[in-house]
Image 1: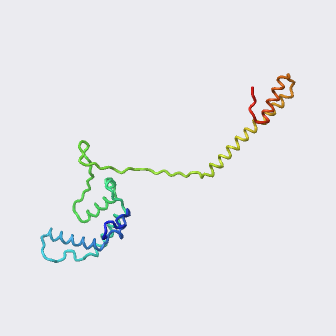
Image 2: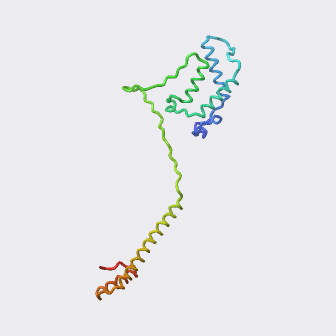
Image 3: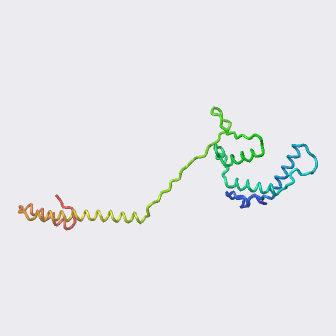
Amino acid sequence: MKNPKDPRRQSIFDLPGRWMNTMHLARNTHLVAEALAHYLFNLSGSELLFPQGKESIKKHLEAWIGFLGSEPRSSQLLLGQSNPVVEALATSMKRYLGEVKVIYAKSDKRDPEFLLYDTTHTTMHAYVVKPAIFDLFLSAMIAAYFAAVVLVIKVAFSRLLQSAAAFPVSTQAEGKLKAVQKAVQLGVQPRE
């Protein structure tokens, strides 16, 4: 990438073909391996210690890039006892090295030099909710129920007034009864 503001650098996706050329990585890895071998075994000259070349290294690197690209590698995720990245690295090293031991770091409780935070485990709850039309239908049913109750009360009260009108009453009480009946028919609250 020629420009540091290249859009490929702005991606949060860890996609192997976009940000890394495996041929260049294989060439550089082969070069570092040759240099280390020459230094460790105190060899001089230009003979190749890894004659199989870059193709076998390229296949190996592609497998590792594919694996590491599919696993999260955040530092707090690597702290767990059974992390697949740490287990794969330990297994791979055990194939080539004699003694491999995974040591889990814990900070000193009294005077920690560093503090490692563990991952936060969250649970997502998803519910199937009723549609809005259900609320509309339920509101209409409740309104119809209240209207029916009010209608029953009005009919029962008017029948009660009619049956009370059949009994002989004094003229003063008869006037009050007629006023109450008229108020009920008009839907107005009768005065005492």
